[in-house]
Length: 213
Image (tube, rainbow, N blue to C red; front, side, top):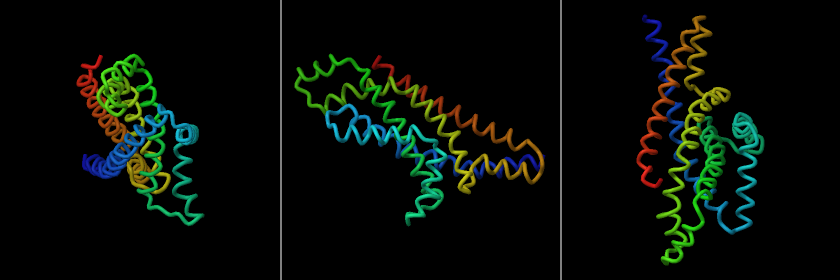
């Protein structure tokens, strides 16, 4: 029993880093995705092309490769980051690319007649987007955004590859030391709790924005 408590405590210490990385990534990647989506639906061709290349690059290559490039590759040309900074930067850029496409599809799914109606009412482009289009689009992108949020929790396990102490690495250390698989079950339960909380949060958001259906 004592070993079980000690193992759980140690793994929970690793979960602190997981939560920190998760929150930092969400805070940075969602605004990045919104900006990228607004650029992609705009008529500024050169910016469209830049964002196209960005999303193509980060969605088309493995997140682990991107993490290795940031932490192990960039120091070769004199750019160095701490492990945590490298993880936050890589995860934010990667998930920002996915959110860009999710938000873009949500915006473009809104009937064009609503743009025309807002123009007739004398609303500016900014007013149209903030008061009419984005609230409706937000309702539609909640499910895919929730999926990305769940995937992010699981992807945080990749940071063990650059020496960071997350949930999975903490569990693996105990497994190696004590030769027992119990820590893996503990880690799985912690991940399931996190994903359940994320789903609950997004369900509340979906209910809140159901007024726009």
